[in-house]
Each structure stands twice: as C-alpha cells, then as structure tokens.
Length: 366
Image 1 (cartoon, rainbow, N blue to C red):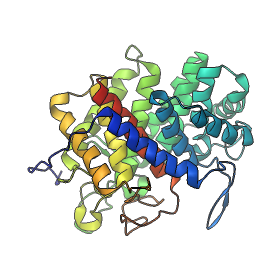
Image 2: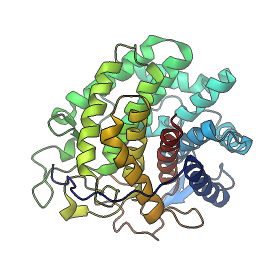
Image 3: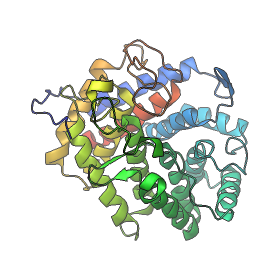
Image 4: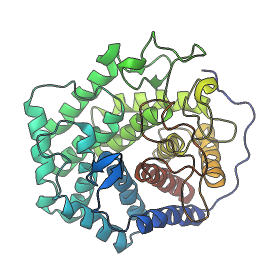
C-alpha cells in the first residue's frame, strides 16, 4: 500500500447537531431539485426513476429518517415506490442487481408497516432468481451492494433462511471465483470486475482499486451484518472481510481526509472524491459504533473524513461537489471537481447521507 499518511489533518470539532443539519441541507437540495420522484431520468436516454442510482439515494433517505423522522421523507419515498408498484426495475424476472437495488427501500418500508404489497414483487423476483440455479450473477462488485442487502433484508423480513444462504453463495462466488476471485485478501481491497485483476495494472504499475467500487462492498458488508446480527453463522466471515478492508482503507486515506478515486495509484487518478469517502466514513463509523473496529485506531479517520467532506464538498446550498460520475473505474467521469454536476446526482447524495447518519451516531455515542 502506497498511500499511508504520516501527516494527520486536524479535524474540526463538529457536534451531532451540526452533522444532522448538514445532512438535512444536502437532502433538501436534492428533494427540492427533484420534487417529483416519479419523473424518469434523462441522461443520454430515458430511464425509470427506480434505477440503481435513485435507489441508492433512497437508501440514504431511509437512514436519515431513522435519526430525523420527518413525514415528508416517507411521503416522498412512498410516492416513488407506489408509482413503480413496489416492483424491481424491469420486472420480477430481472436478474440484474442494478434493477433489484430499489428493493432495499421497499423492504425497509415493509419493516415499519408490514404491508405485504411492499415486498410481494421483490419476493417473486428473488424467488425467480434463485430458481435459475445460477449463482454467478454478481460479476462486478457494485452488484454486491445493490443486491446482497435485498436478500438479507428479505431474510430479516420473512425469517426464511434460504434467502440469506443464497446471498452468501453468490457473495462467495464473487469473492473467490469470479476472475480468480475479486477480493485480494493480501491487500484487503477488491478488483471491480475480472477486467481489472492481474495482469491489469495502472500506468504506474500499481493494481487498480476503484474507491467507489470498494465502497460499495464495504457498505454491503455493513448492511448485511446489521440484518443478520452477531450470532449468525455468517457474521464471523463477513466481519473478517470487513476488518481486512478497514485496515487497508485506513492506509489509503489522503492527508486531507478524503480518498482518491484510485485507492493506491494517485499518479493515475488522484484527487478529491466524495462517494468513496462517504462510504468509507459510513463503514468505519459503523465499525466503531458496533465494537468491530477500535475507536483509538479509526476515530481520527472518521473525524478527518467528515471535516473534509464539509470543507471541500458541501456547497452552501447543499449541492455536493467532487462526486465522480457513473462508470466502473477511477477514470470515469473525470475530471472530478467542486462545481461539476455529475451525470447523476442521486447516488452521491445517498452515499453522503449514509456516511453522515452513521457519523452522527458516532458523535452521539450511539
């Protein structure tokens, strides 16, 4: 690992109330700009608003609701979900993790309402995917975040073990088999897909580890461990992977508190970036809050990350800068700047809210 920092950025003191106010500001910007959640996105082509980018936003909104139970968040969510009939994008026979991501929010809503219509189509979709007998669906690591928590939440909602068992089979295939195994346990980081495993190298000879890609997996581990609890037989395995990642990511943090799009190769694509940083803040804060990570070692990284996000990324009106656009590696959406509007704004806000909410809990002492 080449980015270990010896000079520590000084973290400004923020209160939990400050963090909540910043999260509210970023969310208000988004909800104001996208006031009608049913309108399709139009980036190069028309896509329905339950695509993965918007689904990630709702992951963040559901997290925000947990610490700021404002009815307008639920009204906004239910208007969106009702419009899409609580159904995965592209219907119940899709096997694409990106299509399934919206199911996380449908399941979150079900857990507070127990309204079966909110999960009927998600359940039909997972049952269909399981019936194919194939486990090699998650060929890119983003898919682990998009779909694995849908399975773990379905297990939590129904108590049916088969959903979790199948999710772990698919996760293990991605981890150990796809491309020879997408998780490099020696370095604690993930190759985005089989195209990036060795002999692929960045121009400086380093391995290519994409910040947001590893962030997706990191977030998924948090979500699944939360769903299944410490006593579950799979918890120990996921915890081990989470700690390996945490140790590796800690070494990659920049001196200013952010992370580069290219985790170990700043020569190729260094620079400030919000989404990976917010996901790492989410995971590390959760790790401390749940006594998986030691505060003495990781708390400073969380403080520095939040300080940098507020200082360098959050505009006065709540717009979020330094959000890397969609893609699959550090080169995507470049240049990433303070003022550039990414091709999609929604997932950046979702990542930010996830990180902000868990850091809020850290400051509150949970």
